[in-house]
Image 1 (cartoon, helix red, strand yellow):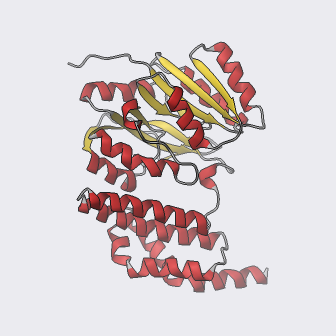
Image 2 (image 1 turned 90 degrees about the vertical axis):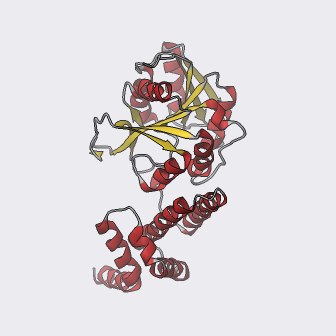
Length: 327
């Protein structure tokens, strides 16, 4: 039998222009069944009423600390919040997302019960019509991963993923680790954190809901800079695995990398992206590594559709242009 511990947990929420979503997010945080919380809201130079809403909640709940700063980006906000946090454990919530009322307690129980430094729950997406995908699950299944196994899950399991938001961390995992500003911030540090954690407890219950909104950062269009940045990051992680002699893990991540290159190509097609030289380079990467694509853990339909886009990209683009001109 394990003993529940009630150490202080710091919940860090960077806030920027989310006035239409912030009430629901903060309500889901202050109503957590785990009560020993420090809630740090970093108003990152919001130009709407987000900062005012943060102050209103701080007046209602003395666990909330609000920091107003000039816009410096999500990563700077998180790094600063970590530096002033007093909790032994850290949770990161995006200011437009929602969490189940027992998410923090659930993740903390996993840490206590299995004597680990990090725990994870499942994540689903929810759109502005409150449609959830995949459907919320109630699943008592628990798995314990080594660092190597958890790193594989980051890139092959969408419900685990490489985000900070559906996880609880012992603060010591962030010693000498800072999140860089720019694209793929979570991806830049998650593999380092996981490698320090040694063991990770994973619940298959869905406790975190990522809200898809039209103008959210992760829904911005793909472009050459974004895709290059992704490839740089994923190559860095593959190199890290090889250095650790996690060769099987490196191979699995390479397979997912080829799938993601194909996915970018598909996005470029849908966005009418016109850099022929670059899209052709991506096509060749997919076609030359199609066996890696087929070994990816994505479902077969997704892999086949990606392969079709890579093979017929230019023809499909030509047909699309002709149809557009006809109308």
